Length: 115
Length: 504
Image (cartoon, chains in turn brown, purple):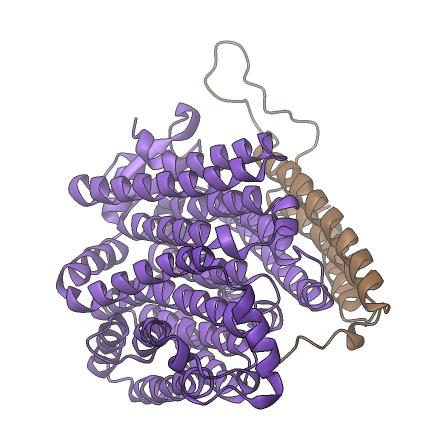
């Protein structure tokens, strides 16, 4: 299972970098969305995939019994999803405004402030 | 309970919320802006004094014991950075009163500034790597909104690059945090400092260290990852530029210092060698970019990049003296760099342009402004007895003692080129006569000038200039603080004991 997930994460990273290297700003944002999802899946995978073992402590014991799924990475991902959602919402509005102001969705036309 | 550790985060958050409550009343927002940042400055000074007297302070948020809960830790480096954030916040808040237009205020300039300061202070004080990511995102979102305040074409174009590259670096940071957790099962920095050397496959640790290096290098605008900075820093209102110039890249530098002394000091020959090369190229590319340009804000933006090189050089040499120099340099640089942006802003309000070709004659009409420019400019170039001289002297001396002749040569040449571009601004803006073609515009701006506004803008400049002179003349006490901060960085046992409560 981990191997499949690793491949999925790799494919997502590859696709997102490909999208970000396009000239269109819409594809740039799609690339960013894929990138943040790839990062979330990576955290999920890297901490180990344990099925059907909630981290519950049996009565009278100090620790969970046997194998258990680590809840912390999921809390991290949840935080990252929320932050990512807010930031990407900003990015979408930004490219919309940039398109309105510049009149182009081509990154090559947005070079007046460059070095 | 060391509540004082949490105050530099809580005060800006509170001030930001309060200014949102008074969103319609700009007068109230301005008062909250000045008073809130003044409170932040006082709280951070108290924090530094307490850290200096009592050693590393820790507060466990929600009383969850470390390493399970999130801790805020104030060691000397963190406390020094917080004080600098307080100084910058206060200076820029006063400067904003006359220089930020009513439209920008209506878009929420003041709440965003407080939020930015909260994120910066949180990043400086946190002792948890995932929490660091969260604070970085807080300050990033605030900086995104501040950057596009006003929505001109230049700001939009700059913001697309700024947002993309900073988001990319944040996601790299998140990936590195996730991988670290996968290897060690902890996110607490002190706990990581204990557990990372115990990881079986040390090669993996180095890989993760490189991910952190790339992520923080983008944030610090180090070579070859600095392109977002000169494309965007000259576009927002000048007060915003000054705040960004003072604080944002320094969060990246601070994180590099924290991670590559506390967590990833196991393979110094590899990681710090890369840092050293990065530092050299950062200095050269930055200063050459500045030498080419004739727009004040662009020149100063490129100088941020080149100065970042000196700070990373202090870390990369990784001797006690080099770290002292690095900490000293950060203290000097934040004050001086922001001050130069503030002076450029005043020049703009007098002449109506940042283009050096289009302005001139400032020395003739305002000799005091020339003097106020010379203090930070000569300090940036490293002329004694100002603060920059001692910063450069300590770092270069550390380089000589480490016998890294290449980087020493680079640092010296870059210092000379810095002097060149500062003299360029001096010659063009202050010394030469006002060009005929733009004389009408200059006169128009001079007429519209409001004496009270100028006074309010000059006050923070004078304050920062006094601090620059003070760091230069009283270099010994400042050196001692930097020395103690560097000693804490090199010997992490105090940090670990303060957080975990056990001897490592």
